[in-house]
Image (cartoon, rainbow, N blue to C red):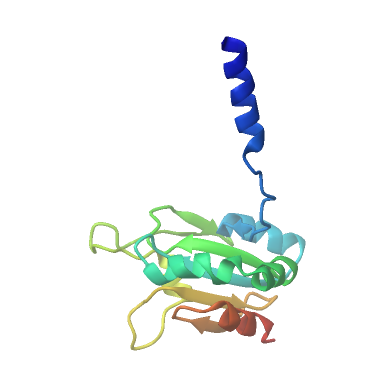
Length: 158
């Protein structure tokens, strides 16, 4: 009986299909980005999100899993993903950045997204995608859900 149980478990374990793991985007932190840029300058794509942001989650499932988007980001960009409501202090280029709105606002926004993804006369909004060139100069900002096709187009723009 015991031998039969062990054989049954063994068969069940090997009957479960094990799919190949999809290649995905290697997301960097700002600290990792600084190290990477020091070694090899490259374009940068920063995705700001929040846990409550429905469109951010939708982009994670669609645009950021699209094989062409993944390939373009992997080959041509450093990809950074940051929770806009992070409570962490982040040191980048020798400067410390923090969430100065903590305790003052219900959905407080970290200093980095406010610096990189703010627009004059508009409140900060998510999702926010910021593209930078090899000299870390902002080339474009996007403040909406981007479909896989839209994401491919903005990543291919020089």
